[in-house]
Structure formats: C-alpha cells, structure tokens
Length: 507
Image (tube, rainbow, N blue to C red; front, side):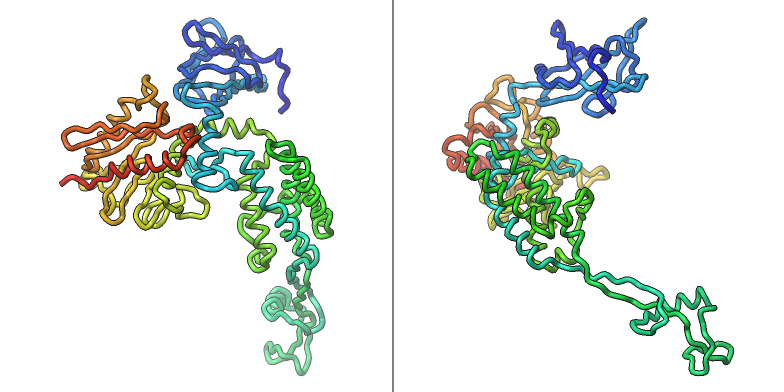
C-alpha cells in the first residue's frame, strides 16, 4: 500500500515527564534516551496500534479520540517503529531511535569485528541466534570485501568450466505406441486395466482371457532424453546477478581501490555473458533456489563447489541494499548479540574449536557443548547434562530448568565455571548491578557450587572477585573496546580469571 501523504498522518508524541518528542512519519533521525515513555496519538480513529510489529495495549482519553499507551525502552538501543492503522484503511509508520550510555550501533559493530577477527577470520560475519532459533547476523563491510577478494576469481573460473561442458539431466517420459520397443510393463498393464478395448484378438497373443488370446494394440513406451540442467544453471545465474549487485555496491567501500573494484566487476560481467548463463538468466531464476542440493550438485564437483560458495555468500554478504533494515533487526537484539559475543570470546581465550562448521554456538554436540578442546568444553545457553552439573531440584517433583549462559568444564577434573552474561551495569560503570549478583547466588544454591561469575560491559577491563566464607563471585568486564590494544594479553586475563573460578560441587 502506498504511504499516505504526511499531512493526513496523526500526531504521535513520546512523553517522559516534561520531555516531549514528536515523531514524524518514516523519519529515523529522532533519537530519544532509554526510558519508559507514554505514547500519545492525537485526533485519530485508530483501528490497530503496533510497536515493533507487536500489538500494544492502549486506552482512550475521556471525551476525545486521543490514544495513550506505555512503552518500556529501558536498556534498549537502536531503531523502533510505531505503526498506526486507521479505520479508514490508512497505515502510518513512525520510526525513531533510542540511545543508551552502554550501547550504540558502533559498539555492536565493534563486537562483530572482534569476533570476526579473533574467533573466526575476516571472511565470516558475526552470526548469532535468538532463543527461538532464528539466525541473524551483524553485517561488516570488511567481511564482505574480504569474501569478494578471495572468492570472485574462483566463482568465475567455475562458471567458465561449466560453460565449456554443461551438465545435462536425464529426462524420462512415457508415450503410447503401437511398437513394443522400450515397453513399460507396469504402465501397459495399468493402461489395459483402464481400457480393455485396447486388446486385439489374435492366435499368438500373449494375453489369455476366457480361453481366447489377445495382443495389446497400444503399449506404453518409455523414452529417455538428456537436456541441459536448467534448474542448476538458473541458480548460478541468480547467484551471479546478486554477486554483481554486491560488487557494484562495494566498489566505493573503504580500502577498495578503483583498480580492484574494476577487476571484480569485469570478471563477474564476463561470467554473466557466457552462453549457459545468458540462456538461463531469466526472471524465473529468482524462484530457482532449492533447500537441498540437486543430484547434479551432489555428484558434479563444479556444481557442488559453486553451491558451497553460494551458501557462504549468503551467510557472509548482505544481499539487501538497505542497511537500515539490518540495523533495526540487530540492535533490538543487543542482549543476544552480547551473549553470543561473550561466548565466542571465552571459547577463543581457552583455545577451543567449534563443534559445527557454521560456528553457531547453538549448533551443539550430542553431549550439549558448543566448543571444545582437549582440556575444556563450553556449554552455551543450555541446561547442563546431569553428568556435568545437576541441580538439587532434579530429585524433586518439580525439577529445575536453569540454563546458564556459559558453562566452562575442565574435562580432566569435571570442575566447572558458571558464568552469566548481562548487557548492563551499575550506576558505577565499573561494576555489574547488584541484582545480577543475587541471581548468581540463586545459581550457586541450585547447583550446590561455591563459585560463579557475572560478565558485563564494564568501563575498565580489571576483573574483581568477591570472596567470603569459602564462596566467591567473579565480576568479569568484557567489551569490544578492550581488544583495541594488546588483545592477546586481554584474552589471557579472561582465561586466568575464569580458570580461577573452576570449582566442584559442594559435598
């Protein structure tokens, strides 16, 4: 539906005490501090009211058509959208941005850069997952550029080899015939059952009915033909089309020379002009993608490698041209991004490898861990196996269901370090919030362990340990800015602080 003119849009206000912010339709440059706000929509006959695509409860002011609602934007960072649907059918969208002292888009991309540099390499985006299992990523131009540098030549070389000798697929079809060559017995039998009048009476007929011999007047023959692998070639054409768009977008990215950009565009353009691509680069190519590999892509090494490269491309390069959509989708999930960021960094500090090639921490081994080494295992946002760490409530009629954010287990001793990641901090920016320490004490009580730790984006990298009565709480600040200088030393400090928290269950 086309956007209605701005003059017909209702007036939307965000109010916090004496601070009032007026939103304008479709404008993203209004920035408000994190807080709880009253939303007021003036003079509109509202049919539906959404905040970030979810229905929001609202009330009407007495004697007016003004609408009131409340939204909690505490600890929120990024873009948000208010959608007002009127009874007339008009839909108006109002976008704004929240800011916070703890998070910004720059901080999110900094976390992604740290993970891409230290946990992966600069050819892989920071992919994380929501608790629902939905995969998302924080796009980095550096990763996209690195991917093109290392992959464009290989992609174009494979396309050239395919053009020289395209794969063909066998196509089998059936037709009715009076000749017995290539007879399909099952198909012919079905045809005779459905059409008994197709039998011709003859003395030497192979079919006997009521003592008489018959010969089928029509048989079904099977014919096999080889035709070009249309589906696979359409997928390659679509891949090249998207690759060309990305190469053009990145031509002016930081660190790209005009010569290098021209090379990319020239190689891709030449590949797209090859006969096998021109023939299949049609509007229907956009619907050619298949969730699993075809037989040709499984058996022909050229097609198999291209499909792997296409999957890698879609994982690590932003095909869409509007980065704001990515920013909105990611910044609302800052807590999940920070949790994943911390998990990757701790695994790197302990020199662990990933269970899954995807490097997604939610892709786990049968034992439940996401990363491992000869000495350690890392469990990420999962209920620990009873053999690793068991809650005393598991022996009751209401078992516990605690899911620590991160659990590091020393394989040789079965000692563990339980860690909880919190993307927030106290009024003193060097310390975590007191309520997060209380939550840790609940974990310690449930699992009968003397030690635990909270990870938070503190303002300085120095960890602290609170100890008394044989128990301790670790306050471990981890944030992207601490990796700007002497990163290997900082990773070593993280490992030392967590290793000191390894403990066994209390007797």
